[in-house]
Image 1 (tube, rainbow, N blue to C red):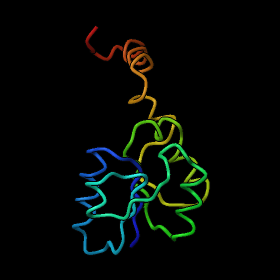
Image 2: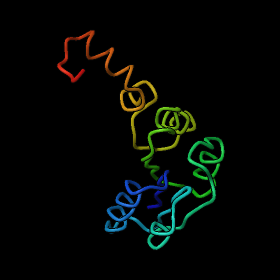
Image 3: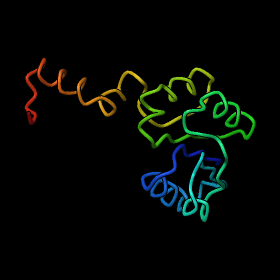
Length: 119
């Protein structure tokens, strides 16, 4: 199984470490990755917000699963783009990721439905 992880931070490093422990995984790519991730995955020079390039890469390399770790591409709709291209991807779609990406949206939603939250 080939896995693509999108991101370059500690969260993505932890994901890569966990994925590397699976006997089902043959190859891990990370876009863009970092030096630490590069010790367990092949880093590719594609930015996390370069959706077209990520979709093309996933198709060219026959990626079995893409895991999106960073908030910005989640909020931007990378999961939606990958699904529309017929690719398997793990992460919330754009309409759900806004809960993480926008404090104002989340606070308004919580107030609207009387969900307790800090001021």
